[in-house]
Image 1 (tube, rainbow, N blue to C red):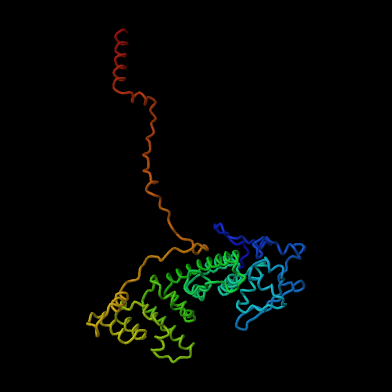
Image 2: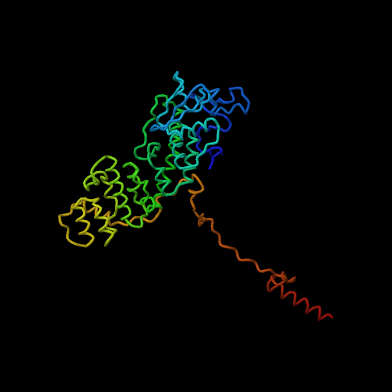
Length: 405
């Protein structure tokens, strides 16, 4: 799917409108400029994207050795973002951008040159969101967040959430400040805040999707690729709707095995527990019984004495050792059912995340239905409502008429 629509605006008063489609952009001082129009060229020659003849700068972008070469134009790009302005302030013909994936950087250039962005996959949209955040392009970040929200499912949510906390302002591990000194001005601070807001909204919706599809997410192989911090964001959630706590325990066992392989450690139970740390206590073991409990404890995510305490409490036996207050609280938490209500409502980023809420009228607005009036077709209906005195006078008048007749 190719996204060619204008970025949606928000209602925030301090939002800065960047209309790429009208060739308008902002310089460092926050003034609106039209860099493409300033070239004096007509509409056809104003398309400078991938124009090698008129380029005066070259970008080599990519990570992990996957680098591509992109021609650029100083006057155009320096006016689009404070980051580009800072990069292009140095006198060099080649600029290496080794901290952004080349797919995301290419979509960033397409957006800045008013070309249609191509967010066809989760990977491309995710890389583009990273590039938009690092180059302070909030409207492109919004476009990526809406597109990613539209594609969210259990697997996509895992891929989106991976390292997204570095782009957010409210998740643990979020970056505390921009890396460049040039980003300390007011414009850059507002742009960074807007980019982080879209990332926060996307991360919020991704976690809700993982809550609703916990079984599929915990069984996905992409879970093993998450860092410890990203895994903790998921498995520590109280609102995970797992059909069985055994699924969560098996997912943690797979992740700990993969972590030992990545760090070149022996696949021993002690090393796996060390890799998990406190995450090994996330499954609610006492909600399991019978064979499922035995399988969960056989994964050895807990210390031997902790497993003995779980077995004793599950079988209502006396504990092998005195149970302290901390251990008692842990046993109570392992026996507490997970809540069934939603953790929160999603942020409306796309038709997929539109909240389905039935509007219930207030009691003050509810009125009792009026009884329908019975239609009357009697022409003398008005005389019947005049009362008994009127009927008596009418009868007396008729009697006098008959008497004098």
